[in-house]
Amino acid sequence: MNEYLDNINSDNTHDEGQITYANEVVSTIVSVATTEVDGISGISGSTGSLTGIIGRNKIPRGIKVDVSGDKVKVDISVTVDYGMPIQKVGRNAQENVRKSIESMTGLHVEKVDIHVIGVSFEKENKEMLQSQKIAMTLEAEEEQQPAPEESVKVEYSEESSLNAYEEDEEEIRDESETLGQNGEQNEA
Image (cartoon, rainbow, N blue to C red):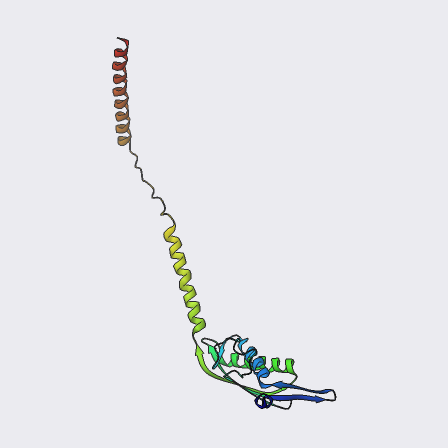
């Protein structure tokens, strides 16, 4: 129980009493505020998931909080997404952490140090995989569609037309003669 009390620091002392915050509480605020910033892929030593942080009495790795009275100093080690402007991401993280701590606890944040310890290609890889998946889906859809019907080119000339007419006329005569013979046989 002494370990737990060592991690509790006081906020402001009022006539009604005092409000104290465990380092874990401030660390959780820092963790959430940091990972909310676009371009931060994670905090060093964490998997990027808050399930291991919330509700436990452990300070997340990659975050150091020093609460002294009503003043706080914070050190955060982060990984930044590849392609993001690191200075801008760092400044945004500092500001978001500062605002979150001050608005939720009333503590004064003296400084927020951001240590960029790595660059993550995870987001870029996800985007590339998603693009490949879309391309494969489009290819599969194209393969399933029936091939367009080929048009048959018919050439017309007077000679071919005359030959076709003569062939048709000859067929009609042959059929008439056959019918005529069959008709004569039936009458007899």
